[in-house]
Length: 485
Ligand code: GLN
Image: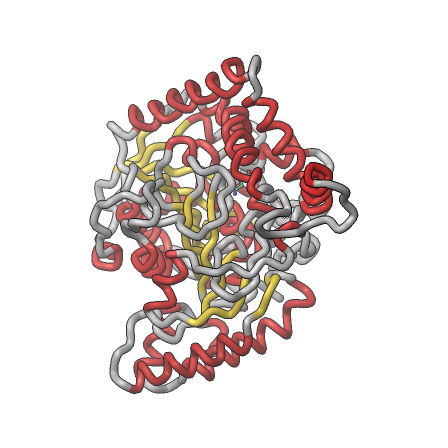
């Protein structure tokens, strides 16, 4: 089997059985990155030297007989994760030369298990976007069709897995940024429950929504990555101190008797026929496997996008105030005086979408509008949360599309922010409710683009969606198909 095609589990078996070394695996991945990067553009920074050194260290650990599932496995991270000594840009000019003095907890956990870092992945600037077109480091292309977007904002994280440039990656999801690119690139992507994974050292976009999660080739790898990064972190007070289940142990338990809810607000007119077809087939598969379907309603779904764009922009306007050219990041050299320096540094450093959101958020928080917009949005958020609580009294998981359409063309929506914002209509409510959801491959469009299926779980119900995802994967072959690149 070709090294670049291996899952974490396959590579682990080969490393443990000494058929392969981590240096060989890492060398193969670096060669693959070099070969396809001109067409895909998944990476902002490739850390070849450090990767080979880490791989050699992993090989020694393996030789000593200690081989964790992630020891020697070449991974990559969205460029939103701080990595000590390695440039971290968050896709922005304002952090073009930023070298963090410390690392994100989630990366430290992977590194401590012996994982090898191949590099830092492209993304929408400050994770604001659904297409990866707002990066200051160029677009990332969809490995299934390079005229299409890979999704966003973790576009590089999804494209790198699909193009076999990394075995697995980490992304972040504030309104769909793991699930939507996973769907568009044909990989598995999981947004954990708010509080499940530490966000220490992850550059903040909208702090009441942001979560860290894995993008992988299959569900078993997703379970392994989640288990490695999950858990309480004293450095992140929003991380919750509940035990991390052994996700792998229950993967094979099947879906017999599982109650799956179909929220009627997610199966709307105007859903792309290719997406509808994949959903119908998925429902049929689950029926065959013994799951029961229940029609449910999440009545406030129609308000989710508007609510999200008030809360997310309000929080972003506050979080992004720290980039003022004084302590770190880009500083304008054309300025006279302190205020002018801050203004020019921000004007030069931020891209158009980030500026739009800072202005929208500042407006929503300003006196006179605060109650009408921000407080109102918080109230609607509670209604959306309650929708999920009510519906989950009757079902174990929910099944929905991830996105209304397969990947769209590069340039198609970039000048129409509203259209772009609507591409997250099915993913945003999950973030507002704070619960967990996973995207997994469920078919292909007539044009050959991947279509994902979303499984939404109860808060801290990752075990159940992983189990349901695994059962689906065992019964289908979508996840085995490879992008043509
Ligand atoms: N596309 C959404 C946005 O632009 C979600 C982004 C995300 O999840 N980081 O805000």
